[in-house]
Image 1: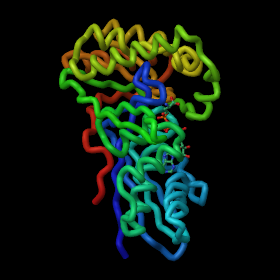
Image 2: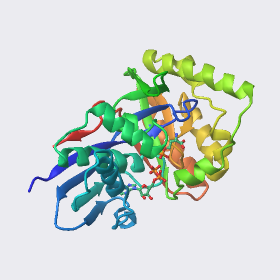
Image 3: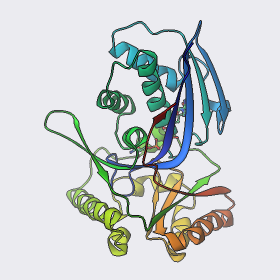
Image 4: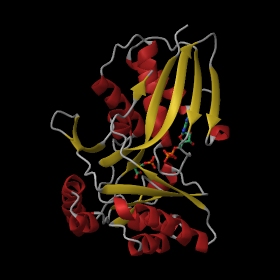
Length: 300
Ligand SMILES: Nc1ncnc2c1ncn2[C@@H]1O[C@H](COP(=O)(O)OP(=O)(O)O)[C@@H](O)[C@H]1O
Ligand SMILES: N[C@@H](CCOP(=O)(O)O)C(=O)O
């Protein structure tokens, strides 16, 4: 019986002003093994394995079901094994890896009837926003915008080599659902203009490495002001990161992980400063300096 192995990178959604439309794939991976079986079997190993659902509510299984429903075929019994390196509910796209892993794996189990764009559209429909499933599948730093045909444009921003990335992952969880519940339904014209201009500036900063554009461009008024109260110590960690040489610090995805961009020469100091600032408040965080995962999802 064929076993398909799918590797899906972590992602950082939003990147400051790119709420729900800008995200990057990061060099930390979840691995999913899928095979046709006699009955539904789910096993998990690695980071957060104990929290992974073992029944039909499992997100990988729900993604597999979505593909078979789309194909109008009965859902076969499957064996799913997940080996996770990405902590759950921390803003590093663990749910996106489960959706993408399930959708890509189901397509393989079904004999690959769907192309990459069809898989991406199914993943976006499941997740509800494209900024983590698109980079998880395609890799790189992706800017997404809806088009007049009702689909999406995907623009792969060439990440400048001088821009390094550090994440500080605290020892508490924040579900994306909870972090979305605090957002307002409407925003002011000034805030809309603020984010439109800063997103445009940031996208040029990412591609050129221009320090001023990165520093100014990482600001946001659409989601971070509403979410920062859910992330204890965020202002302190931000101040420490900037004092250590970061261009800026933002919430990764819906949080609570915090992410800094800095010159390569300063990134270790920035990571240490973020960890120490949280430590000073009694919060344990692990830090990682990550690269952009250019390949996205890969199949073995
Ligand atoms: N490897 C996995 N297998 C199955 N489900 C997963 C896996 N990783 C994450 N999930 C699901 O995604 C949920 C976390 O999603 P979410 O709150 O959006 O956080 P994140 O920011 O990590 O994506 C988990 O509670 C779990 O239901
Ligand atoms: N744009 C979304 C991104 C959620 O990413 P996750 O990694 O926290 O699932 C949001 O900000 O809600």
